[in-house]
Image 1 (cartoon, rainbow, N blue to C red):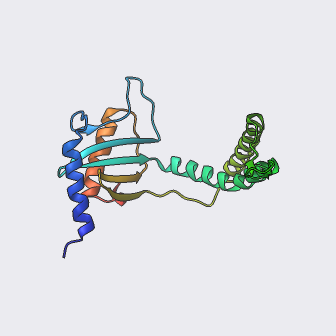
Image 2: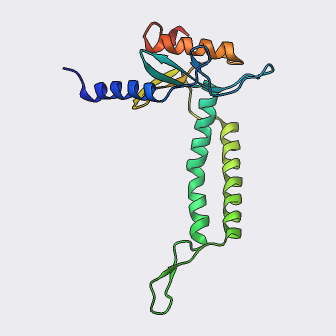
Image 3: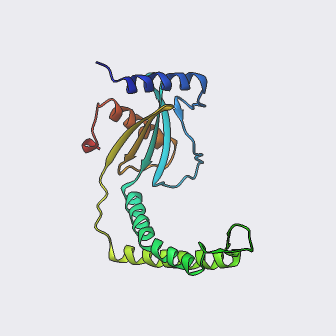
Length: 188
C-alpha cells in the first residue's frame, strides 16, 4: 500500500515545478554569484531537477557546523542574562490609568540599546570562552533529506572544498549520487 502523504507530496512537487520555472544554468540552480577571484567558502546552496522534481542542497563544511554549535551554546548561556536585563527594566509591568484599562509600560529605545549592547558583549565573551576551551562536539559528515510541497531539501555536511562554479557542479553531482544511493558519505 502506498503512503498517501508521500504520494500527495510527489504530485505537489511536480505541479510546483511545472508552474514556477527555475532559472537554471547548465541544469543547475545557483543562487550565489561567483567571480573570477572567488575564495573558498564554508557553506553553499545548489539546486537541480531530478525526476521532474526540484532538489535543493544546503551544504555546510564540518568546521561551520562546529562554529554554529558554539554560537548555539553561547546563545543558550546568554539568554538568561538578556531576560534579567529586560525584566530589570520592568518591561512587563502595567499601570492603572484612572478608570481605563491597564496600560503597558514601554521601554524607551535608549534602554533597549543598552540592553542589546550588554547582551551582545556577554554573548561575544561566552563565545570567545567556548572557542578557547573547546566544546564536546565533533561534527561528522551527515545528510538529512526532507520533503516539502515545492521539492526535496537536502542538508549536507561534508568536508568539501568549494571555490567556484566547477566545485558547485561537483557538489550537485555528489548530491545527485547520494539521493540515488549510488554512493555514501563514508565514500567521500
